Length: 299
Image 1 (cartoon, rainbow, N blue to C red):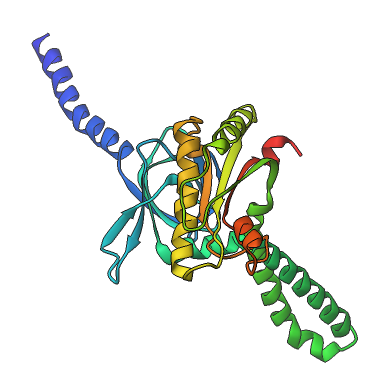
Image 2: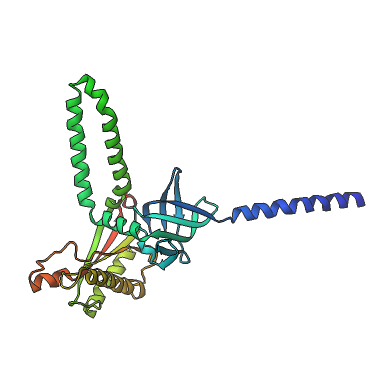
């Protein structure tokens, strides 16, 4: 009987290291790089390099930062709302039981963020160019059908062009997948980042309406007139967007995971004539929109 007890104890001693290894492997931290394919509140789909898509879960403790400097040694803390489709990111975290990557930190380069915001702001232009390229390819196809020898020589080029267009559609098409369900525009005095308190009730009403919408997102974009330097106006547009975002988060109680791209658009996309005072006043604005993903809407 003593021999049987010793055998069970020995087996338990051999089992414990295996248990420790399995627990450690489960909690092991991993790093994944790729493009944000889509974003929905506290989760996003990451298209990894040479691998399948990864579902990334964002939490209140997820650290978001922008790496800066020649050697990328400095890090600037950023809002989670900067994580927009088309942005190249590096995610560090651990997988949960649903094979989702729970992000401990997300980092990206400043020029990658600017590129993603430019893509979002210029989506209409990309769409037009894509249509033009598609029409050109169809025209070339019709001409090549009449030329047996030329058909073989040009097929590779056509395939390459089509692949580039399809890649652009796959990367940028996600940004067209939202319905605009509500919108509020707030105007600012020249050189100011504080806005008239009369707009606060409008923002809070928008926040209340958004909370009743399944899968809602809120987009905030700041703009400036051309009065002053371009660098100053770029900063003004960013500060104005941040000021409005703070009201939505602090007073409207909108979670940061529901805030999308507080864009600093600078002097771009004027709605008024900047040569007149009236037009300048119209251009000093922040536009707030309530969005819903078309897939969630069931359309």
